[in-house]
Length: 113
Length: 114
Image 1 (cartoon, each protein chain N blue to C red):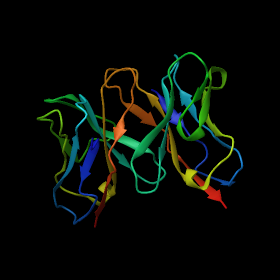
Image 2 (cartoon, chains in turn cyan, red):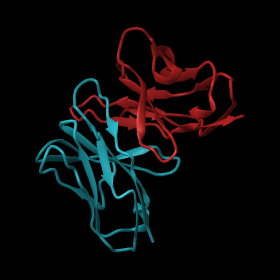
Image 3 (cartoon, rainbow over the protein chains, first blue to last red):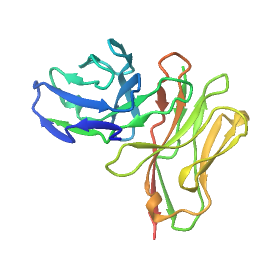
Image 4 (tube, chains in turn cyan, red):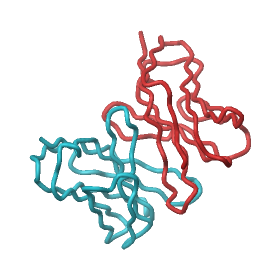
């Protein structure tokens, strides 16, 4: 099994550009999450999804959008990139049960200049 | 609101020495608690978790953690650190709503001296 995959691994954007971070999982998990990790700040939840067609905001959703058209995929969209969005982005998935165990992808390092 | 505090940003230990990483949580009822490890350039891997029962839980890679309700703590320990343990460690608490999301602490970076 591939688990949770993310593409790209690295990306540099100019201010105002747009891009989509891809996330896919092959574990048939219903729940998927997007986090950003800033130095010394831990992981902050951006958006999450409890199943195809259902998404909800996390702690820091501003500047991002998500969609969930299939169980496997959960892309994160940045519409107008800003320097404050420079971060490492992690996607995770889980069964969404009381085990709470989340499986993480390897991350995407994004720089906005 | 639930929160997690990891008071140590960095910790340095010598190889073979014991390790304790601190974690304090804020939640009234019995929380679901987790420790994750992040090796350089990698995603997060679950080390161990506590839901209920025995307050001393064993995890992978020789780690253990002890839940102490009276101190609102869930400290991670290892009796003898290996150089490969150098990584960032995150404590997390499970949210008590239907999102099953995790609320993470800010992390502790472990450096291991040869």
